[in-house]
Each structure stands twice: as structure tokens, then as C-alpha cells.
Image (cartoon, rainbow, N blue to C red; front, side):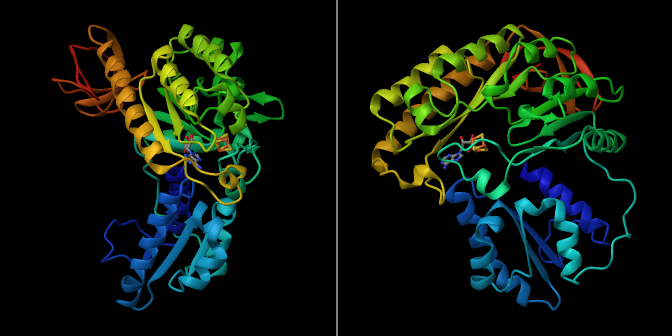
Length: 395
Ligand code: 5AD
Ligand code: SF4
């Protein structure tokens, strides 16, 4: 999501004559795009902004743009505490970014676009913005605003632009990507239309919500080998009690039913888990562990609960840090085993791999593969999986 937002902002800067560099010494502008989903992310962004004061003072005319979710949340106090930030552009305002930079009068007028955009092999395309859920721990709805779906014309225009720029794969993005609904056109409907594009070789999406996984979706997946057979589907907890307290809108049992639907459609699943939610008991934590036995997740990102301002969960008394640490440790170990087993199960299979370098690519189920022979970048080739390492398949 943030990568896509950065790309969008960079496009507006490019239209005003800027070229991209990763080298701070030669740069005239820093675009700092930020995350606020956990305290740690925000902290890192602010300390980087702090360090940039020196960079800015070293050369006349240097500009700092502080953008994204932390900018949305902390705009006013950042202005006060970090005068080095020339422009503050919150995540809610991504559509107004061009106006914000023009209003600053620090940039040349738009028009200096530097030719055809090279989008890389994977084109990121936003299809929804904001979030219509209010999970009790999550700050996203507050900083990104209410959910809305972008019109299909815009999505098609963006997708075509990425494909013309050299993308073979499109990644549809949204906070709740599969909650897409534009005047009755739902996510399955959108997928059915997008797979008609002849240049498109693969279509993936992130992040889906379990609430929108249904029969129609499972049937849609079966329609095309262009559609990803992998989903990163956040579960957050294996305890129905905690899920209810988190206001996730499903129980463990419902989640398991969704997994069954996906499994029948050949879709492999990875997930996000929050450990140490304030009301999580030892029994709740054990429910999360047992979910990992029940579902063959290919991987999981595990996060320690981080209290975020404005969210109801931030008001709950936290559980002791050492308990959280211990649970995280146990969970990470278990996730590692689960992921290792998922990789091992691929040995002996033949799978279509989309090559991102001459010897590295991804299966349709999103396993990373390294091959002994070289293949054409952007092409899909059937590869026999000979061996599974912990985080890569050898083909
Ligand atoms: N604390 C810890 N993890 C969180 N996430 C969202 N909010 C919090 C929080 N307050 C995690 C969820 C989500 C992922 C993007 O970040 O697991 O799926
Ligand atoms: Fe946050 Fe829940 Fe919305 Fe995901 S669905 S962005 S966790 S509020």
C-alpha cells in the first residue's frame, strides 16, 4: 500500500521535473512516506525526520515532504517539532497530493513528465481507499478514512498504463481489497473483467478480509490461471472470544470455513497474527497456536500488540511485556515450522513460475523459486520443484 502511494507521489513529482535517486547526498528533495499502524514504524519515521535536519541545513533549497499515515496522525505536532518538514501530506490526501505540492510553490508547474513510466514487472494498482471496518486495535480507519471503491474506468486505465510500461503482473491494492464494490460491481466482477486483458499474465491482490471470501469468489478463481492461488488473509487471532473483542466480524469457525473454500479452490494462505492483545488469556493464545495446526499457512507475520491512540483497545490494561515476549517467541517458532512444512510439500510438483530475474520467480501460489537454468524475465514457464529450502524452492 505504502509502496503504491509512494509511486503515485513520485509520479506527481516527476511531472514537475524531478528525477528519482536513492542517494541522499545528491538529492534536493526527500519524500518520506510513513506508516503508523504500530508505534515502532512511526517512531522510526520520526527519528529519520529528526536526522534529516542536518541534511537540509547542508545545502540551500533542500525540501522535505513528510507524507503518509504518520503525517496524517501527527501533522500539527510535526509542524511544531520538526520545522525542517516543508510539506506535510497526510494519507487521506493522496488524491490531493498534486495540489498540496503546487500550493507550496516549491516546485515547477506540472508538465515536465519524463516520458513513458517504467513500472517494473509488478504493477501496483489501487482499487479501494480507506477502510470500512473498525477493528478495535487498528488506527487505519482514522488515518485513511472511510472506505470507497475507485471507478473501474480508472482501475483499467491504471492497469493498462502499467502493462504498457512493461508489467506482467498486476497487484490490486486496498485496505480491504476484496470489499471492492462500485455501483454493484464487486471484487469477483472486477477480477472477471481484468483477466480479459491479453497483456496481463498474473493478477494478485492485497489485503483481503475474510468477510468477503464466498462461493462466488471461489468460483471466480477457478476461471483463470492468471488469478493468484495465494492470499495473504489476516486472521489476527485463533480465539473466537478475542476475535469478537477485536471486532473482526468472524469467529474461528467461520474463518476455518473460508479456509476450506479457498483450499478447495487451490488457494494457499498466509496470514497476520497479533499476539498479546490486552484481553488475550493463555487459553486464547493456545487457540491461536492450535489454529496453526488446523490451517496449513504458508507463512505468518506476527506482531506484538501496539496500543494506538484513538482506538478502543488502547484504553484496555495491557498484559505484562514478558508474557507477550514469551508468547511471541513460541508463536514465531510454530510459524517457522508451519512455513517450512508448506515449502517441503511443494517438492516434486511442477508449477508455473513467473520469472522476475533470469533464475528467480514466483509460483502462482506465491512460493519463491530459484532455478538452475536461465529463463526470460516476465515469462511464465513450468518448473519442476526438486528441493525445498526454508524460504525458497529449488527448481
Ligand atoms: N498492534 C499490532 N499489530 C497491529 N496490526 C494492526 N494494528 C495493530 C496494532 N495496533 C497488524 C495487523 C494487520 C497488520 C497490517 O498490522 O495484524 O493485519
Ligand atoms: Fe484495520 Fe481492521 Fe480495517 Fe484491516 S480491516 S485496516 S485491521 S480496521
